[in-house]
Image 1 (cartoon, helix red, strand yellow):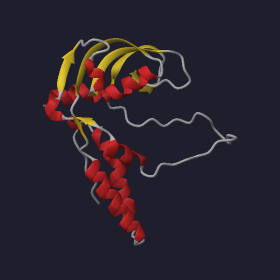
Image 2 (cartoon, one colour; image 1 turned 180 degrees about the vertical axis):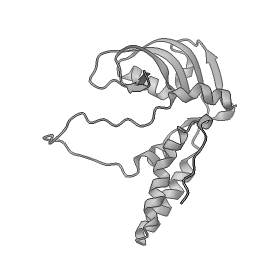
Image 3 (spheres, helix red, strand yellow; image 1 turned 135 degrees about the vertical axis):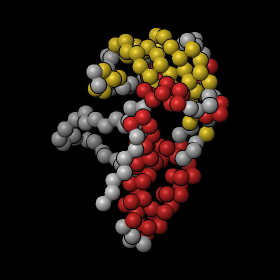
Image 4 (cartoon, one colour; image 1 turned 135 degrees about the horizontal axis):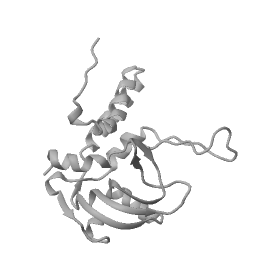
Length: 186
C-alpha cells in the first residue's frame, strides 16, 4: 500500500520534464510540430502501478518479471556514449544526462527505454511496482479538455485557466509533502 515509506522510496525517480535545444537558429529541412496539450494527453493514456498491488522486491534478477511492471527502481546502468543519453542523473544538486556507469532511481518504463536504445543494466538494488496498472487521470483529462474546448468555442478567456490546470497536474506530483504547500493571496 502507498504510504510515507513508499513515497520516500519513489520520490527520487521524479525528475520533471526534459527540454533541450539541440540546435539554435535556422535549421534547414526541418518541420516543427506541436502536440496539443501534450502533458495532459500523456497523463491520460499512461498506465500507472495500482497502489493496492504494489510490491517491493530487493535485489531482483536483472531480467526478472519486474521488467513488465510499472513503477520505479534503483539500479546501476551503463550508458554508452551517445548524442542524447536517455536517463537523467543528479549530481551536486544539478541534473545531467550522463554516459558511463551511473546509479539512480528511475521509472521502470525509463529503464526499459534505456535498454531498448543500447544501455546495459548492471545491477538492481530494489524495485517498487505492480503488474496491475490503472490510469487515475483519464477521466480528469477528458473532462477538462472538453470543458476547455467548450469555453474556447464561446470565446471565454477561462479556457486558458483550464489549460493551465491541465498542464499543472504533472508538476503537482513533484511537490514534496515535507516542504509544505504554499498559497498565494491577494
